[in-house]
Image 1 (tube, helix red, strand yellow):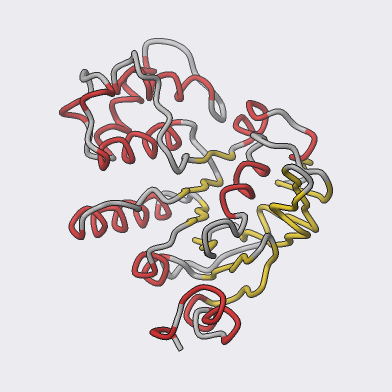
Image 2: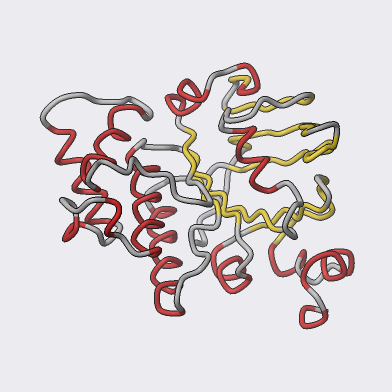
Length: 247
């Protein structure tokens, strides 16, 4: 958590994304430094998930630049972006419904950065299920999982891609207090493995506990960025998002 962040691993510059003629992202710029945990916060509809979708290749940016270690991600397909070492979770978990947990994670092992095929895939997959607390239900169908387990499976699949940069989209939302604390500890362990993490989250307890810096989006624009506690006291951020308790 206290490790010094390095140079920019990801740079997003003046990115614009339209849906139906309306800008979901309207000139967003930010940098993710290697070795940090960066938080992206903002009200619903501010463009947080759209930003992840654009960076990961799920949507194409209409304007702007996205650079990851010299690669122009705006020009690449999602599978190539994953191969470069960028992974993400989805706000609504999207597992393969007819597969077991082990099979779901094994697929991710084969299609991430330095994807592997062979007898060690199942061993790798089981390792990530153990890491996320799901080893005991590895042979279970996805349909049997609780919300917490689905969220952890989503994280296990992303980690199985062996990312250098991981986007976590509200993986802690909807969890109990105990599950939330467990999730915070787990994300700290992910960071300690050398993975740069971007946390998109509404739960301020998690943001303050985890994030070295935060970027605040509002109506598809960046309205503040910097050290977490300083930004969360910024008058414009309080007015746009947090409310009186943070004033």
